[in-house]
Length: 117
Image (tube, rainbow, N blue to C red):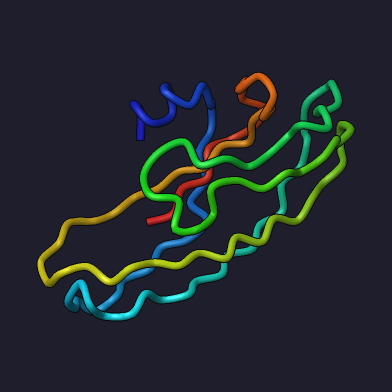
């Protein structure tokens, strides 16, 4: 995770989900996965209206980004990530994707990295 963390400019990472699917062919249907998290601005300054959860690494599984709007210190927001995960061929390696809480206008990281495997 170290390189992904550094590339995203984040200081923390949290696993928001892990799923193991039986192997299949590339023709097998994708699997819908829903993960729900609550993010909190635990800093000293408000997050801007352009705060968002954005994919920064790996496949976005149909969830490239979601706006959060402004969050004052201590405020929280629920994030529901509806993902569409494709089946992999038997023997395929682990797939990992990451999203970060960022200012969508500037790309500046505002919070932790969110990892789905």
